[in-house]
Image (cartoon, rainbow, N blue to C red; front, side, top):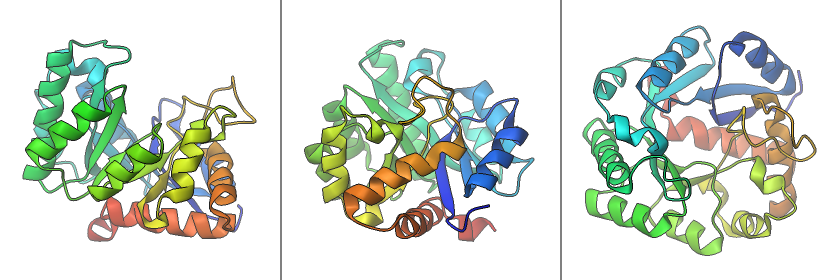
Length: 252
């Protein structure tokens, strides 16, 4: 195992979780959050997390699945392994669920996060204005993160001004992602997290392959280069940020 220790704060573990988590450990990715996207997937995420001391889960309804509603979500949030609501939000790029359903289900999850004093994990795509409007109207939870951040400096500033964190995925390694790297450069380190969103979005130099948490080091390296910091420093700060964001000290 490497001496540098990372925290993958957003991945989707599956049936091969044991193998994937072991490879992550060997690569120095020592803590992981596996994320729910609907009720059944959230149940699966919780079951996986229960098998590992260093893995936690979220429970939520992704905007793609909003048409199915949130029935049963509040009960899942009672699990001691669940550390956040989400991923929740708006996706007006694919529109797999009607926009009115997306808005309503996102609103419900904002309210759940506030009611239960839990962190909120947000997925937003082609819907920045609507996402911020809903958060402002309902009250943004104290601990909110925009996962797989794909905005630029303006969107980053809008997040930080609301005390929300931004989580950087492998997209930041893509040659076309200059706007994201500009946002990283300006973003204060205390507002940054890193993630793989695996098995999706494999970073350069692994494009086209199935992604996994072990690959987080490539994204971390780009963040370090952009910030002009040592990889060890970026790993230390983003890990501390994630531990604080998900309130892991209150759980362990």
